Length: 386
Image (cartoon, rainbow, N blue to C red):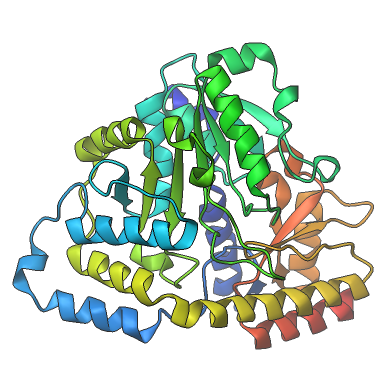
């Protein structure tokens, strides 16, 4: 009998891989399912980004092994973008590192920060990788439950002293996946103080910083005075620039944390294909040309879908950030049961909220990365059934 790591017994199958498998089964049965499951932008990567990629790919030198630490020009553009967007000054040599998608860095930082017995403070419901990477690194997870009562924000004063004493890292994610919750700079100031008081790395996953609505502008945790003493922030080009398949993102912040993350990266993976980095530079330079159009599309979908769901008697809030609706399930259902009911009766898929952590029970998540015409069709299907 084959023997594997005991760590594998502690983690469930990856949520979105399970979703993909389930929907593929329906497709093989000839069933047309409208899926609100995975937050994968349906809009095309902008033409000016594609052209930059094509131009760079014609240079033979760009087909050699890329730098582990990213192209100098890409790191410099990241630093320029962070200053232009947030007024955060960064050293592109020591405080910035490109990533093969932000998920890669989020997973690897656990291996650079944690030893067996160390604790990661993980607000949940959450992106599953915060917890699973901790477990794979041999650490323990202390969940910080998020709820409507606390505005889907962790209460630092409620964190057990024992857990705080063992903690090496505190995870944050605002604008939030899956709840859509947002924060102001005051919350980040509180988080940075908590991290400093307890000698904890504060890691903010800011993947949705550019996807916001109704006048809200997402801050960076690095805007807080003293944040670079103990904080790191992750960004992704996937959602903001419709580049999810390109696998490119970056982390920035405290130079020691960046160096530790780089040590893991250089021993486990390689750098990003240079033409992708060149295209990413173009995205950061000229992204304002298309960001408002992208935001407008998601805002329109948010409004249409939320109003239709309310019309069915379901209580759903309109988030000010990210690309999801976080829907409380109707009375008489749990998360999985309601998701299955919608799938079997309407051929529409909502992601069960308990896949994002224990506090996600009682909710389903709907991604807005579905074309408008398919959203309208899904609404009609739901009206017929519910």
